[in-house]
View 1 (spheres, rainbow, N blue to C red):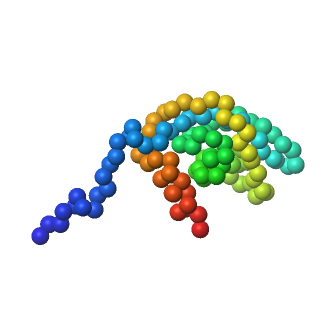
View 2: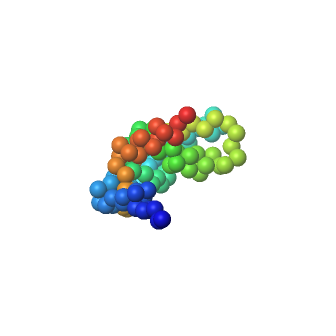
View 3: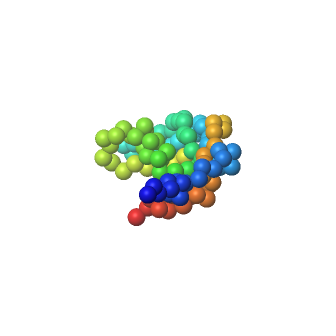
Length: 109
């Protein structure tokens, strides 16, 4: 007997109902060898404010750390997103902002 696969599948939602995905240019400060540097970098995220990006978007923060320090850096990586210079909507996520924040809570130990 064949089982119905439709029961185990997730229902796809409309892309227009999810959170917007932004391509942003941001000013970032970071400390390297006791000197503070500033750089303008790009970020792709569903979160708009620098605080929310630093708190919830682990993928973007990890990518910034690798870009600013290199993948082999052993020292403490301290960086702050100072401001968002400009942002542009490039698409929509299938999840809402609250669902993205829930994913962050599940990823933490």
